Length: 428
Ligand code: NIG
Ligand code: FE
Image (cartoon, rainbow, N blue to C red; front, side, top):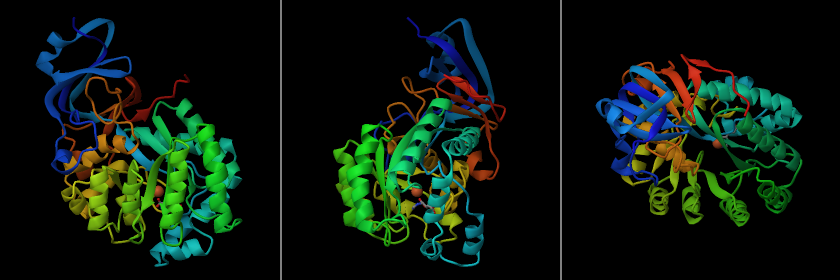
């Protein structure tokens, strides 16, 4: 018996299925997008049930009286983008710091003067849950308009129990009130708060916050900013080990501003992902590849901070590190959710190919949040999160940059963005 579709998308110029192994993809695997030309796709409920050439649709799928058919008008269709590294819930913004950075003041100096993360911590502590919900909803609408259908959200602008809890609670509420798939990460170890000593705060993170976050199921992952002047390798290991003990899967901000052995630590901890990697050298790359840790590159942060040390993506791909790409959306180092722009920067500054960037923002990004069983590809059994572009070729996305080529977006088989307009969210 043929499967019966609730929704059929037909007349697709090029369907990027991203079919292939479910594990993180590395090396030449990143160039294989599983493209079906002149394609159709069938969906039942929230799940893809069939993809193939248009001519085979009628023979493969049944319809019922209410089956909806959408004409993609000979445009390209691809999986919804998976945004696997954001700090999306925070109070305030930092335009003035951007102006100082342009004038040549280093990021670490601004941080040392009480700006940077500490400034956003003050603003986030002062913000009400309702304020954070309002800006969070605006940001998720913006993400959806760009075709981002899954988002990882980190805490880390609270640096005390009360505000870390507030951020993660808001993220959980956003997950209930929006159609996007959201996952949360506890990043209490993002900075040392001004009102605690290093030892006191690390003890608080490990002895109070992580157990609380795990018990209340506020996060699935635990992250740490492993960086000179922030958390050392040993301190980072303590945080991640404690997280693992309480069932939180490890992630790490590694080798962002200096080389520090963060990639090697990620591999020893069997982290789900190691993120930034701007200074990671050959030994770190080999360690990541051997352990199958996804390297999440965030070239928008390098670009926005006006730095020149972009991650060595070509060397990483040659070393078989599976690469994902993300914005790092945050008020300090990348105030943009534009994942399309990150693809362009990855192409021009990291010399990634267009197919590699597409794997990096779909399947490999899903692996970086441990959701590859449902997200990041359009093959039978996967969640029907997809984007219909306004053009026949996906290559137009990084090429015609600064323009949003996303026309329609579907989350779990439901229309969320129509002709570039985000529809009102239906409450569950
Ligand atoms: O990922 N690396 C640490 N945290 C952020 C920057 C945070 C900020 O400046 O507010 C990042 O780049
Ligand atoms: Fe980050």
